[in-house]
Length: 131
Image 1: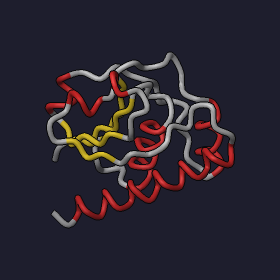
Image 2: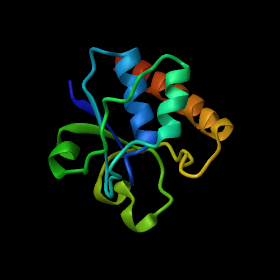
Image 3: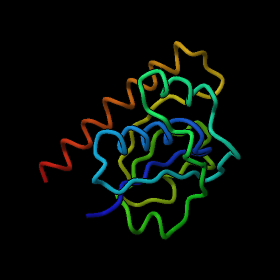
Image 4: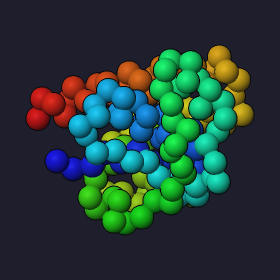
């Protein structure tokens, strides 16, 4: 089975939450996340809202997106605020979720984004299991 790759520009928020959810709900699946311009650390508020629901993503690190990652994975683009650095530009068959960036948002808004990502990840798992 191919890996699931969640991508966004900074790999500090949305894609990290998606990776955390997939690890939690489908530990048998291979998953990673990456970005075209990764930050040096995760968004601390993203870590906090994931901890609120019992998912620890503190061991995850932002990573730079590589062609090897793309070629070996089913790629999910979380959404793009920066069109020039959008990972979807580099991936042929991408699943695009168009989820808001948690950067600069308050905890209430980040929780809404987290819950949207959770729903998308659980739907992705169901779809992959039915193939």
